[in-house]
Length: 499
Image (tube, rainbow, N blue to C red):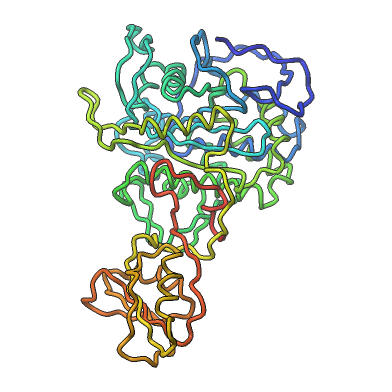
């Protein structure tokens, strides 16, 4: 159904209306011209979300006056019927379209944007803002997800289509924003309240205006397709390099799923940068960022700067810890569909639980006490590291104590510690085969002051020889906690410098 008219009230209500942001009065404006096709990037979503976060400064219309006219409008909800029932809070569908045919040759070469355009969405996320405006839940929808469209008319040929299977990112090519929204709503039963589509230039400009965004990696990140080449460590990425980071798909075997994790990490880092750097309190910086973003956005007719400001004022306390990120749980990888190819089929039960939580405005992570934040991030998940413990002292029971402590931290200990050949070890030793050096570093991080000792031919099982200096096992966690689709992480768990 058409978007209902907004209330004339200019005041931000204490309890926002269900299904959308606080109502605002808006000035009439001339009808927009034909929609402009936008060039490609992979994390266009973060720029639109950044505007919402930046609006929390409450600077108001004095800074954003006139910027609303820069937003290209699209009638994303025209004549839509039989839609899901509205839930609590607000759901925004953020998409990035492939429009590289509009990018100059120099830009293509510089940012490695080769290949033929597909005129489809290459990034898609649902961002849910809670009704109390204290939490944002971001759900990535893999572009290769198996989908079945509702009946529609092809926007290019004018030919009517019955519902048929395709990859989710292809819905845009056949029916534009309307078919994309209808397909997502059909798959999730989540009512979409607003639609935002942003191009890659606004992404780069926003990152540059923020002064760069900090990311960290414990292993080299190198992708010959995008040109990304980062050594281990912490890096402040400016616009072009940030684009390479969020576009890279060939760093490991996880392809798009791994890329979505990096996109989520980058979004959390952007929120952290915006909320901790003082930019929100600098009117000129605030204006520059909003200009960089709004000048390249396509949005539905009901989403403008009035709504952004009202929402932003209600989110003054927003921070990385207020955000949570996940990917739709996948049931079948490589699900073959005739005429479509290899797709990702969602896990029906797990996906249903996820989208029920969105509709009911509940946190995605399981309720319960929050676990203590581990002290150190490590390159390899402790659950993947096999450990044999030896007692290198004459202290009875030390081996069993170390074994239990390592197991409690997540390491796969044998559970049967033994006595070392030499019972006078002063400094705890981590012995390892050089082929498993990353695992050894992860284990050593849990044993402060331990010595790393390479032993050729030892094999995949690492050995801990507990010495007289042993005091405790320090908690550790993997660098990228969301290794499986469907896992949920908070923003403060994936930004650099946080425990």
